[in-house]
Length: 97
Image (tube, rainbow, N blue to C red):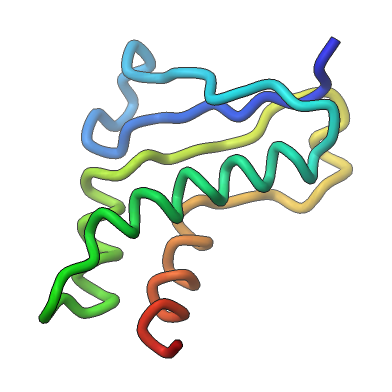
C-alpha cells in the first residue's frame, strides 16, 4: 500500500473539490515531492513567453495553474510542500539562469 498521495487542485476553481484529482501514489515522500514539483514546473513552462516577467508568470500560475499537495501517513514528519512557494522560487530561477 502506498504511503503518500499527490493530490492536485485547480487554482482557477479554488475550493472546488470536484476539480481535484490524484496525480499518483508513492512509497516515499521524496517520490511524492518530485511529482508535485514536476507538476508545478510543467505549468510554469507553459506560461513562458517573450516579454513575460517572473511576476506575470507567477500571477498566471496562481490564477490558473495546478496546485499539488501531498497527503499520507506520517506527512507531519516531512517539510510542508507549498506549490505556490515553490512556483515563486522557480519563476525567479527560470529568469536568472
